[in-house]
Length: 288
Image (tube, rainbow, N blue to C red):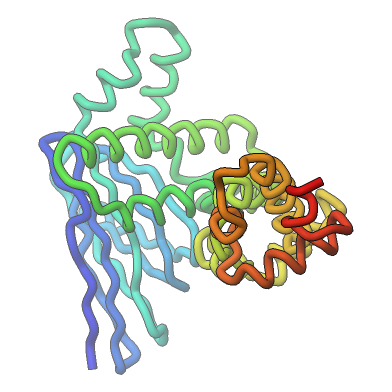
């Protein structure tokens, strides 16, 4: 039985973002990939072993999961994507008009800008090393996840999409300029730390972060501890306790409110963790 989750995530005169996600009980999945005239196309491949055949030139590529390309098309063109013996065919296409990129980069401003636009037009952002498509970085995964899950409409959506698109382009330019390890694993701990710093008040787990950034949860734990010499669980607890100690001095807040603010669903768990950390209960510290 076929399941289809295709849909336009964003459509404007300059930018189109489409999520394609098909699963099929049989062993053959196929999709049509359309490029408009004078457009730049970002294609993020989110499932395993996707074949792409360009109809205009007959070129055939095989992409691994979490690879991407940035391709310029001067004419209307199309390509076929298919996956053999796979459970899912999933990718995100971001199509951007040439004039939008031209105005964004402003190649007339300086030589560096002109060289970036020229590289984009010459399709220098397709292969990173020896005809190998680049791998998505952790940050790219997070941006795509944010785009897919964003719920606001109107001008807020437009501003959000444009900001995320600019960030994606910056990450791509940086990746190709550095030409370091395409897996970008060293970036992972800092991105994970940033995510925890912003979300430690929620009940976050390694599984959630793994799905968000496209990494195995065991690898996430290992990379984080190797970089910061502390487990993710202990780091989250440290952040929560530091915040709790600051909030305790605010006697207008109930202990239960502080517990919730620090990410604890049950006040008993909060009190136990607080006493283990500081040697006294929150109530005792407040009265001292």
